[in-house]
Image (cartoon, rainbow, N blue to C red; front, side, top):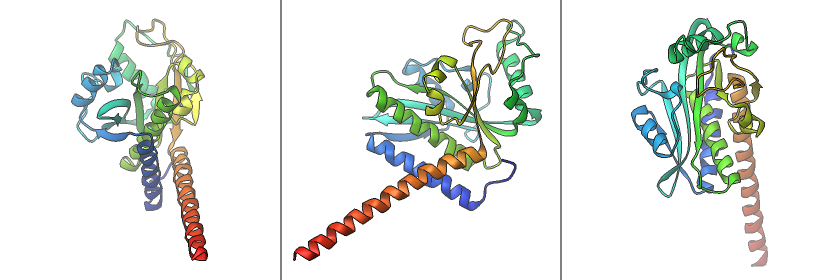
Length: 254
């Protein structure tokens, strides 16, 4: 975005966050925000999710201030997860930074094609919010309810992340192409999707050759927040108008 968030921007983000949380309540869910990844990892694994390297403590140092995970709860049990953490690429582009991360995680036996470039990854630099390890626990609600639930906590991650790390320039993530074709990029709140984030010479077992790069600029997150905040304000206004009409009719009937 190129500039810091002002008080009005932060207010919009929190209004939108509150709006999404209210919608989760309507779905019968509460929400927890976990900052201790020693708690996040076993919670995900207990629900059958293998945690990706990007949220494993052996590769990244989580300190309670550089990452969090939203967990939607129903009847005391976790039903949806979505995690985020902060990266700072310094003088590197996100492309160079991400390549260095992949080399550290997977080692020289899984080299990437450095001639292949995903263009938006070159443009993103500085403080970046990386999100991933999304999960809808199987058997917890209908497909429609599960996707709605995941969409809500995905946007809550975007809003809380940007409100917390106000200097972030972009929010990014990776997803398998098959999932993006099922519109999960939209569920994750990504306004931009770019195919073939990385080209591997020898992909690791947990990576696909056609992973999609998902991203939002900070201004995109604010745009989504304005929509959520506006829709909630509109619904409140309509509800207030209906109550006023009802009161007026009751007075007329007396």
